[in-house]
Image (cartoon, rainbow, N blue to C red; front, side, top):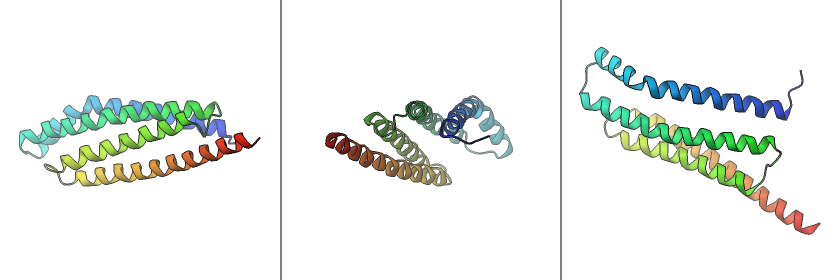
Length: 149
């Protein structure tokens, strides 16, 4: 079996749907898991409320990110690579990562270990921004080449 570009994009689409199912499961299970963990390690009840606010706030941006990723993969499958639409989608994905980083940075006020998630989201934003800048320059070069023909 030869590994083609189309199969790679198809696998990425499958992973987007897998992550969507996992995110849905996490959204549904979050209150139950928090109440279970509070029974194991008793803490201030307000921490559970703050944790739910944090998780559901970040979840909104994760859902938006998954939708944008699916749209980007649809464009790539249609051989639309260095387009303004893809650059816009990458920009949106990077802003979603930045928003998640901000949510977890603010949440560090009550749970310091959220720094790890905030740092990971900020690093992901950096990677996506660099890829977006690459796409932007490639689109500009493509536009210049189209004008010279």
